[in-house]
Structures are given as C-alpha cells and as structure tokens.
Image (cartoon, rainbow, N blue to C red; front, side, top):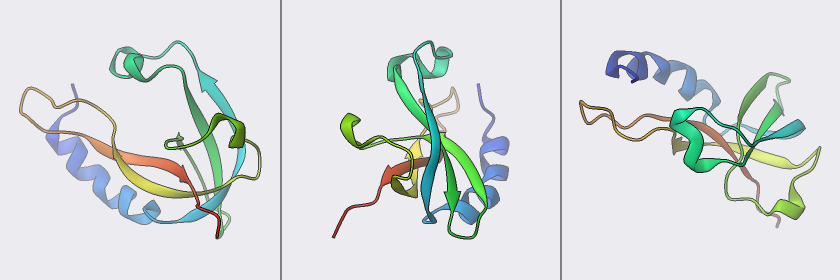
Length: 102
C-alpha cells in the first residue's frame, strides 16, 4: 500500500520530468513483475536521456513492439501506476510514450 502522503510528496519530482522529451538509451522487458504490476507483465522499462542530459527510468506505454529500439524518441507522460488504495487514492507517475512522427 502506498500512502497518500508519499504520493503527494512525489508530485514535485514528477513535475520536473513531465513533458520532457528524450531518447531511449537502453531497455529491458519485465516478465516476472511484483504484485502491483503482475497484470502488466510482460512490459518494457526504458532508460531515457533527456535533451538536457538528465536521465530517468520508467515503463514504456502506447508503443509498437517493432518500434522499440535504442534511440527511439519518447516523451514523459503521466499515467496510473497502481490501483486505488484502501483510502481510494489512485497513484499516478511518470511513464514514457513514443513521440509521434510528423
């Protein structure tokens, strides 16, 4: 269970990354996930280097398996990361989504 206070405290970190563009440096696929993430497995996790040279790790969403490769351009987006807690709080966090070409 994630406390609502911890979720609230993470907002500052999330705001710094949200909407930043970058490229996939490397990636791996998670086949055996923890309890909170079992329903998403298998899923890719990417290491992204942003335009300002900072880095972040997160799951990749809304992608085609054939497009998943090193150098793929992505953007940090806000997505649900866990089901609601006993208090009814839904945890959101950063995931990465491919940038649309064009």
